[in-house]
Image (cartoon, rainbow, N blue to C red; front, side, top):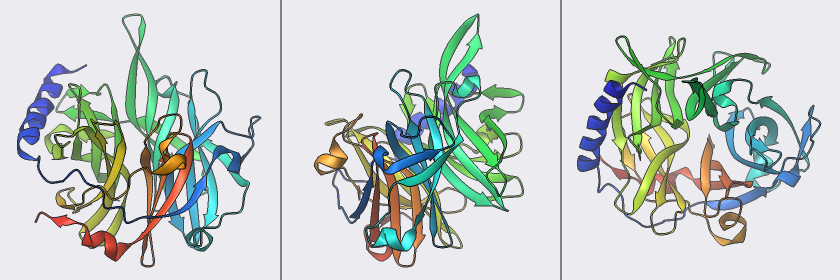
Length: 349
């Protein structure tokens, strides 16, 4: 581990924790309608000997025509709790009517094959750029040092062709000149406006035990995050113990992007979600209070209670769809009118 780079980032983080608090209030203004819940029993896995997952949750989502490409996180046993990522398709107009024909056929497109993801390929976010698909995800695994396997969660990227054939996968590191640093954990990330082999990245590296929201510039070809460009964007408030980016970004205008975020509250350890608007440099323009929180049995109780988490955000007609995991066992599809969401935003600049 490179302590010099971690110290640089820690100083930025400490400054942000002093200056960036007070943007939000500890209240939920729930504007989302519950459309559909999908449990593991609603999926049939094609091409794998285990056709029924134990859990299906935290999906990425991408709109292609009138189809939602749904990429659920799948787990088939509790022995090592190893995750893979599937691919299924839903009709968006049916979904908006609260309907989904089951069982849903899905196939596994991403699973652990490297040491750095040995314990699971988790929590995807998906993009399509220039006829290629990109999945940002968490590689839960190890690195080998001093004759020992050491645990680490890396921010990984899988690249596919237009037919979903895997072309490459690897993980990001943070660089400054000849120095390189891979945090103990880096996850909860999203691209903004990828072009010419580079992108602004909204990301959540763990720096000295703290977890806040950052932005930075990345090179897609060699998977490097430039330390000099990394800056904190949003921090946890006094009633939270961590925050992170939850979803992909959705373009609203020429220089405005919507993204979901989550905060985990100290009082009940509950994941609650809100939305933020950033510009093409990742600077925070507006932020909401919590707009989506788990409620009632299906959302509150599961393998990890009190969670609505990520990972898919879709704008369709006048609606915004949040497609996320519920309590680490199933999927919830939530919808709200975009105008009503924008009314809840507090503009900062």
